[in-house]
Image (cartoon, rainbow, N blue to C red; front, side, top):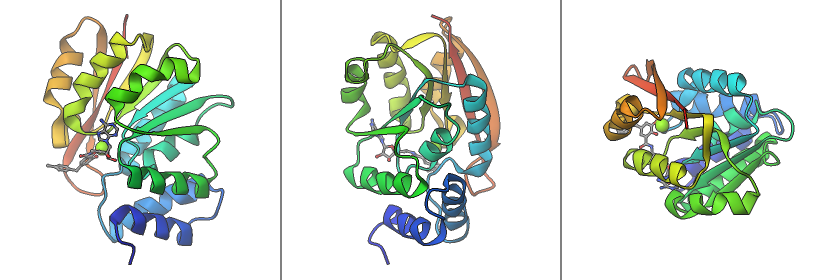
Length: 214
Ligand SMILES: Cc1ccc(Cc2cc(O)c(O)c(C(=O)NC/C=C/[C@H]3O[C@@H](n4cnc5c(N)ncnc54)[C@H](O)[C@@H]3O)c2)cc1
Ligand SMILES: [Mg+2]
């Protein structure tokens, strides 16, 4: 049933998760993807690294590149301090529609602004659209070839401040070698690798946390 994997995930969340309960929605996605069909959510193991970074940074402004079904969007939004905002960018209209409904079911749609479009087109509009200056935390989990060009674009748009944290998923699997090489060798970043397993599988992956130095 459900003509797409995101739609099947949404239907399971709607049937299995208590409305307004973000943790039960997160658990529902994890159990569906661990037991029924794999999906490219960050998952619970890497999700706990994401949680720890969100809690450490206590961000006022968060940007996510690649919403997909909204799994990591929920993990971040549920930990934000009051008044904080999470902007998440998703180029696929169908995925964005599913994510909106999952976020609504979890009761997290008030903290989240989900924009439909390509990051390269939306990033230059963010300052003006949200009347903000810089992001405190950026979670990068979209097409791996876009990690580096989008990090460069964020720099050029003046959306990074000294101390801004960039957290990138999948730097080992599928991998983002050009992005890794850049953040690990640029004097503008202090980078740290968190080894972890790929979501729902026994495959080596890792997340890279890079602090922008200005
Ligand atoms: C070899 C191999 C294959 C797959 C895996 C498994 C694996 C594990 C993972 O955690 C992964 O994150 C991925 C992965 O490919 N993620 C890509 C995620 C894209 C989402 O982001 C959206 N999007 C893509 N580019 C943009 C863009 N510019 N602007 C706005 N949205 C964009 C898309 O519309 C999707 O919603 C894959 C592991 C190993
Ligand atoms: Mg990922």
